[in-house]
Length: 602
Image (cartoon, rainbow, N blue to C red):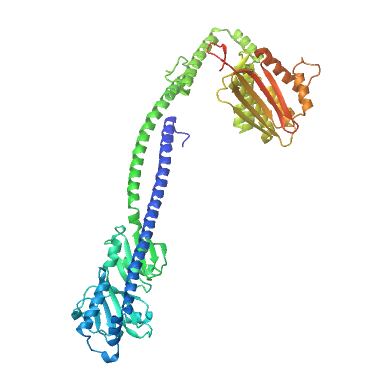
């Protein structure tokens, strides 16, 4: 399918994919990361809120617990409770003076405590001393109070009573209150004197909660270890049955963060237990509330993505048309050439590869037209003689074409190693036979050496490793042609070629003031000091009869650079046994000017 598409559609499809795929991936990653971060921040904030609510409740209840002990440290209160604590005093009301003393005491204890509805000290005979209007009170049977059993089980310790109605008020009170209660026992004898009950308003929870920012649609419950509900704040959107389900299940949870999804609706549940009061603060936050901001981000991201994709499509269409239009024209001209109409040309408006292709087509069409005219203008015999003469000439172009044919055959057979070797050989041959001056740019010499090394690497495989370290700016400097290949060849065949583990060759260049340094180094077998000195001395004398190839190659290099650059040019040799050899060529740093003159590169 893709192969049958036109180039214009391929460019358009590729451009759209290059924009939409990264943009989509970025949007998905951003959305998920933002959602996770938002949920994590909200959860951490809720954990801090529940912990702080419980701490504030602990402080309030600790104050009430301390307040419940103070009557035992007042002798007048203890004396009055002793007087009306026996069975003989049942039904007897204390005197006005005694009630006044107790009222003043209780009122002083409750002074400034806005959260306290009232404080009642119940004597053993059932009479209730209070800081509210005592005429509204009736005698109380301590044993008949619905929560008295819990206070007795505390055995003198303070007990937290869940919200309840105040039945000891004569007219009754429709509101509910929770209480802190304690059995009062006489210090020393531990005899039961009565009971103190501190009734607290549920506004305690609302006041504490008002100091914290809680999610608008969140739900919060305060319960004790027996799952008695003390306070609840539910969202108007929460189903009451769902709230009961959340509360019932979470009552068994310990402190921590949990996830629940009753009815398919996911909730983040945060639980904090107080080791002091036994109260458990449970907060629920619907996931939909947490992700409200992320949904806005999602909509915005989709909008931006659609906008960008639309813009990308327009830009892709424009550039696909502009890029492919010259090719379409070239295709039309080529179809005309196939029919035999060789007088064709395409307009060339750019300097890029398409423009070069157009110029090449124009030259090809002109040349074909000229050759066709020559064919018809020259007699058959002369043409045959020319063809025979051409066939007898083997020139570099014939070799290039032959190597290219071998390359194409190797590619068809998927023999890429042969293709690489043929390509590298062609590059070396073209570089070798090209007619040029005595010097070439360093980058051309390095490219030729690279082609040679590629051929050798195909031969030696992983045993031959090469590294180039070319200092920027030295590529344009002029060097003698075919200067480096003999050094690299020596490093391969005499340095590392016979080693089983192979070796590595480093080729580096550097410019120092007005000098160019070229270093060819290997980690092969190396030479000792005597061998190196003998090799250095051989560079100073003409070629002796029977000289080794290695010495001849190095001697030729040394003589060439001295002839071209004078005595300041040098070939330095260094090395050690087992550590390889290093050949350093030092020549003047020159580069070819626009007028083909050589100038010193500063």
